[in-house]
Every structure is written in structure tokens, then in C-alpha cells.
Image (cartoon, rainbow, N blue to C red):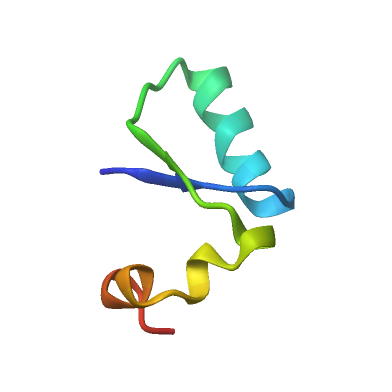
Length: 48
């Protein structure tokens, strides 16, 4: 499992849960302010 991390409340909740339970997951930073989540490579992973 991989966490696609970005700014905002939803990823923050997941990061807090992981910290409380001492869970380590690989993370990939997604810069939504730069529109990375709207580029073709990301849309292959998550088209919606």
C-alpha cells in the first residue's frame, strides 16, 4: 500500500492515524497546487 500525500485535511487525518498507530507506509507527494493530479501520468493511476 502507498499513501499519496498532499496538503489538505484528508491526508492529514491519515497521517495522524498512522502516527498514533506507529504505522509506516511508503509515501508519494502529490503537488495538487501545481496540478500534478491532473496530468496524464497521474490520471492513469486514478482517472477520477
